[in-house]
Amino acid sequence: MGLLVLIRRRGALLLAAVAAVWCVAAAPEPAPRDTLVIVSNHVFPASKLTREEVRDIYLGRRMIEQYLRIRPIDQSDQAIRTAFLQAIVGLSKPAYIDHWNRLLFQQGGLPPLLKDSPDELVSELLKLDGSIGYLWEEDAEGRRDLKVLLVVPLK
Image 1 (cartoon, rainbow, N blue to C red):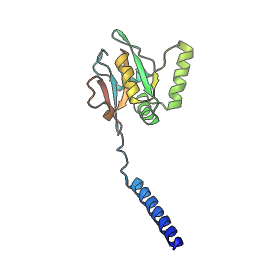
Image 2 (image 1 turned 90 degrees about the horizontal axis):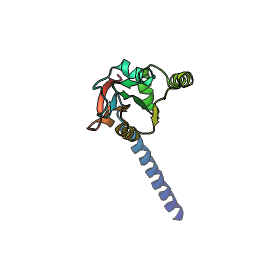
Image 3 (image 1 turned 180 degrees about the horizontal axis):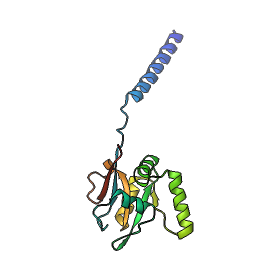
Image 4 (image 1 turned 90 degrees about the vertical axis):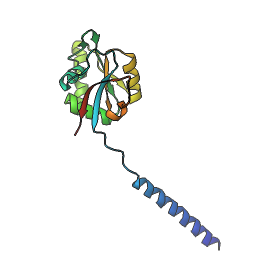
């Protein structure tokens, strides 16, 4: 009888493990993120920017907007950074880093700040006038403290 109890326990554990795997496999995948927004705080002088203007800012070619020094902010998250670099800048991450390394040594420019999360990026945007950054559209929704300068559909 002791063997039967052990088998039942093992069977119950096996059943629980199978159920857990099935639940994980059946969980819906997160919706693909298909829209980027370029944002700033409300002090930023421009109300809209084009893709070309944003590209020039992130490549260090455009550093002033009316009276403010522009300070671009990147994100370290690979998914959004890769999407941004492909859609706006037109460079791979290694090519983008090489561009900034050359620019630093030749002209002494300031590369974009790098933040680890959307919350850190927004916090920096709100305290640093002239800064711009990029977020997934859903991370910017309902944020009255941000100004959307450009909406970039990725599909």
